[in-house]
Length: 276
Image (tube, rainbow, N blue to C red; front, side, top):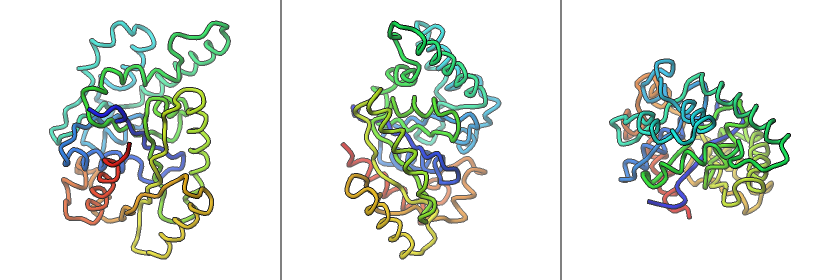
C-alpha cells in the first residue's frame, strides 16, 4: 500500500461538488484496481446517502469512532470492523450522520481543555482522526475524506490526517473565492499538525462546455498563485446523469459509464495516481 494515500476533499463554499468528487474519484480509483475507503466527514451524511444508505439508520459511524478515540482509545480496535460498510461496488465506506456534530462538539470541549492546560496533550484534539486512520492505512491504497461546510475542527482533523487535499471549484471565476480560505487553513495545519500535507490541486466542476470561461479560471489561478497551485487537466462536466446518481445510490461510473463526467473522473484518477 502507498504511504501517501489519504486525500481530503474540501472547500468552505457549498455547491461545488465535494461529495460528488469524493464518490466518483473513489469509484474511478477502484476501477483501476485500487482498494479504496471513503470517509463521510459531514454530519449531513451526504456521501453516505449518495451510496444508497440512510444516514439516520447507521449505528456505527465516524462519530462513534471519534468518541471512542476520545474516551477509550484502548477499545478502538473493537469498533473498527463494525464501522466499515462494504458497499459491493469495490469501495468501502465509513458513514456519517448527525451524531458527528456531537462528536465535533466534544472535540471543541477537548480543544478548550487542552489550550488551558500547561502540559501537552498526548493526542491533540486536532489529531484524533489521524490516530484512528492509522488502523486503515495499510489496508487501503487510498483513503478519501469528504469534508462538510461547517464544523471547522472536523475539517482540520481531516487535513491533519491527509497527505493531499483537492479543492473542487465551480468552473467560473466567482466561485474561486473559496480558495483563499482553504489555503489559509492548509497553511495553518501544515505549520501546526501536518507538515507533509500538500494541495494536490484545484478541480474545476460543473463545467458547461464554455472553454473560454474555463480558461479564464485557469488564467486567474495562475495569476494569483503562479506555479504553486495546479489545476487538474480536465474539468468535470455538469450533466443530468450526475444529478441523477445520488437517487440511484451509485457513482457516475456505474450509473452512466460512458457519460462525459465519468470520463472526467477517470482522467482525475489518472492524475491522482501520479501524485507523490
